[in-house]
Each structure stands twice: as structure tokens, then as C-alpha cells.
Image (tube, rainbow, N blue to C red; front, side):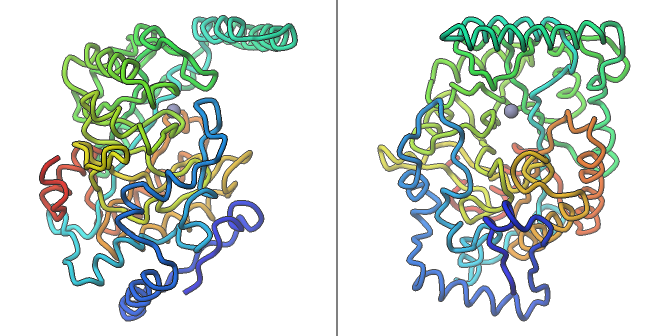
Length: 421
Ligand SMILES: [Zn+2]
């Protein structure tokens, strides 16, 4: 078996798909090697890995709320060449524990998710919010000039498009294609500009009262959210950049989305995956969130905690499990296809990665969580890759579910640790 060093893959060899043995005998042999080799040679303590202790120890020294999200290069599994294998699950199965069996006897679960960062491509209101915020936050005249120029450029672009059909007003297409595969996903919505007290430049700019078009009907974002929920898809919270360590932000944002939805929100993914393993699990749990799906990579694919099984998150400060379950993120669209960062793949090579990662998830009967941003509907390679992936996963006889459904399905299937969740 050959494992491509993820660092090489991301930086210098983006067109070499990973190769993984696919006959059962070599799989078993490999699991035995994993068990023997990783426990002894690498000295990895799997409990410590899953509890987040390695991640906490390896954060950049200058890690602060303003810093970019530390990515796969900081992960303890990266230098070991193990990012592309669910090594914790392999050890678990090699210890003789039965492989999970998903509903209807399906061999693996697939959790489809979408982070709704944009609802409109050309919105003068959103340009104004972002522009005013940038001007307020500018600390000197150079920054003020830059903010003013950016505002002028964006205002002109939106003015030219006024009255034209917005290319993002077709989110019903995601529901249509998923329904055709018997799937329902989770849409993580941001709770609206005015429900966020402290804004970051990367934050979303829409309000739940902004106008969109959904399925040919003019409506507000809140009305679109209710309609998606009504059709059987899950609505989760996509909280702001600064919510990761702030219980007031997290609670307020959750409550705002719940008010729009008229029922509880239980699933969450942090915007930009901005998350601190030392504090965010408790903040989310205290806000009443029960399922998180943040723990993946922005610039790579793979298994950030060496597992594709859901597990209960851990509070490192008081040394106890929390009543919140992680459904780890494994593959996101931007990591594969963004031409400016990450793996920078073309559609066909990205599809090879989807297939190879699917095979290793299938081998342990885990959950393959995919994140596709809804604005990918404008990007043909990204949209096509989603369709090809769904088709392939259907052929693999996968069981599809939203975050909440997969976490509950996982509870029924196999995971002792979920009993108290
Ligand atoms: Zn986001």
C-alpha cells in the first residue's frame, strides 16, 4: 500500500491520487500492521488523540482568535503519513470489536452537509453591511482607503446587476439532486448579521430578513430556511468566527436561528472551522448543541482525529466527556478544488480522492461526512464532482443521513460512548 504524504499532495504533487489496497486479505494484514505498528512505533495514545489532547498540545504558539485556523500540518497524524486512514477505527476493529452495521444493513454511512455562507451573490445591502464594518474596523488611513475602494468596487458590481437574476437563487437544486438519491442533508445557516455582536471580516453578511428566491418564489432567508426544514432536511447552526469561545454569542445565535425555525437547533459547524479544542466543545454543549461536525480540514481531506466514527467530545479542562457528539468532517469541496489554496485538484483527480477515501471509510463501516458549499452551484467542476460523488456513493450502497440522523443512527448501531449523549 502506498500512502502519499499529505504535505506533498497538497503542495507539490496535486495530481497523484492515493493508492490503497482493496482486496480483503491485504486490508486485514494492514489492520494488523496498524495495530502493532502504531501502538509501539509511533507511541500514539488513541484515547489521547480522540480527546483532543494532541491537538491542544500542537496548536501554534501564537494561536489567538485573530489567527487563521491551524490546519493539517499541525496534526499529529500528518508527519506519520496517517491523515488518509481512520487508524483509530482500524485498531478498534483489530481488537475484535464488530464493525458498525448501519440501518438496512448498509456498509457505510454518508453525511451530506452544506455551510450556507452566501445566499445572494449581488446584494447592495450585504455590501453596505460589510463596507460599514470594514470602515469601522480600519485602524489607519491606509486601511480606511482600502476599505473604501473595496466598498466602491463591490457597490458598482452589485449596481450593474440590479434587477438581474441572482445566480445563487436556486438552492432548491441541492434538495432536488439529493432527493433523487434518497438523501437528506444538513444546511448550516448563519443566524443573521444583527444577531452577531462582534464581527470578523470573514463572517457572512446576510440577514434572515434579506430577500432571496427559492424554488421560483420570492421569500426571505428565514422563509427559505423554514421551507427546507419542512421538506425534511436538517437546519444546523453556522455560528460566527468569534462564537468559538463565547457562550453569549453561541447562545444568542442559536436562539435567533431557533426563533426563525420555530424549533430547536441541535447541530453545529463553526464557520471557517474556527474552533479551539480546549474551549469550543464546552461552549457548544453549554449552549445546548448536541452534534458538531467541525472537526475536519480546510486545506486537505482525511481524518483529523484518526476516526470516521462519531464520538463524544471531551472537556480537557475538567477532564470529562461532554453531552455533545462529534460527526467528523472528512472531505470538503474547497480543500479539493480551490485553485488558490489547499490541494488545488482538477475534478477528475478530486473524484479519485473521493473514491479512495470512501473505500477506507467503507472498510471500517464508518461515516463519510462531505461538505459542499451551496454557492458551488455556480462552479461546474464543483457541482459535477458532487453529482459524481453521490452517484458513486449510491453504487457503494451507502446509507445517507443528515448530521442529527447519522449521530442518532450511530447511537443505535454501535457506539457505547453515545449512550449518555
Ligand atoms: Zn462558513
